[in-house]
Length: 221
Image (cartoon, rainbow, N blue to C red; front, side, top):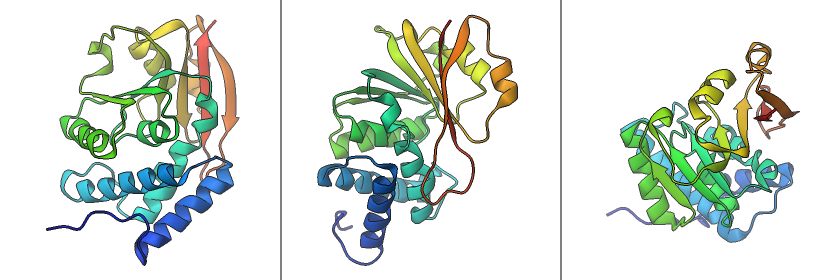
């Protein structure tokens, strides 16, 4: 019988805790002990499920901290005023799960067309008690929400023009689209339809990651 995850453990577990805490400090995000424990518990579940279900190509848990958790948490200051968000093509819950842990007052719908990923998200929601999370096993164009969202999040879903076309029916008129990108996608930005405009564009500095990261917020013009 496997032992329950202990976020205060010694050895590799304490190293993960130290690296995650250091990264969160560098990002300047306030994080309680309970939230840190939940982030580490999520990491532990992702490691365990990934061995069987291949949820992410990243295998090294220390790299998962940098490339998945901290990368997702860098968006945290940019959703401060949001309330009802949908993470499109969320995969194993990125950036949705880390953001939901840090923002218990906001609602996060996590949408993915792969059943194995939404089954993982159901288990995460259940085991971690994330009452502000809802997993949805559908394609974005086939999902018809009863209540529209104020924010559509995209980390690795598609190009920006494709995201706008596929997800325009999910967001209310005053809502926005937030796209996480690597290098600045000049060609995608130039192809944004005329009824949309870039409201904000900023570079994200992720601890322990050398590559470029950008966050682009788009609204109706």
